[in-house]
Image 1 (cartoon, protein in one colour):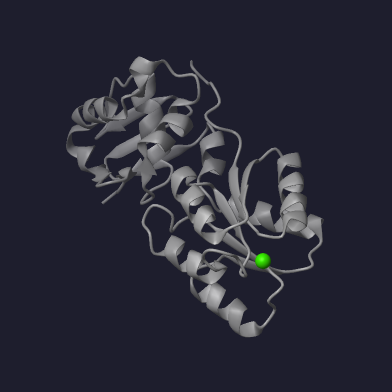
Image 2 (tube, helix red, strand yellow):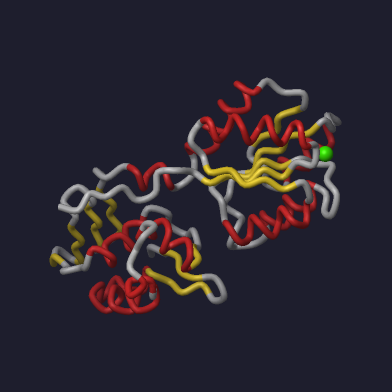
Length: 236
Ligand code: CA
């Protein structure tokens, strides 16, 4: 049975204009094995986040370009990025900013100066809530009405009928179903579900989705096209 790891490293984007602080955050998160991309500007950071759709964002509030609260608001109102946890890291310690940030959907708030061990601990807590934790767990069974995705047996059934899926179709379904309601871009599906180093011929996600939907039959509607983005899993 093919048990190749899917994607074991979390991607974190750090938006922080104070280079010393950004360096400390990047250093400590890379030490944890995360892939870290940093930006010193709010507008540039937003572009990077929209392009990369990371697993976590660490966001300063006082930033050139676009301030952190506006960036937070934009991320939380965009379907592509709204599920990404955001940790606000800022020297602005007025209660109102904390309240506004959390009200906009930020997941946590760490005042500066902070202890790096605390930062790493809070990052781990935030990452525990995101999907990829489940991607690494090969031994689970997901049930959505008539559809059962059994990762341990590498088996998919619809109303008890065993579907003959290709490895690619299985991984796509596994990735989507493990994160119901979350939209994935084609690029994300390629890197997360198929892994790096996949043959070019295998990279046409749409072809695999068409085939997967056809095999799913009555459960085909659970794989929804998100216009301008890609696909998401929508159980009934
Ligand atoms: Ca700043």
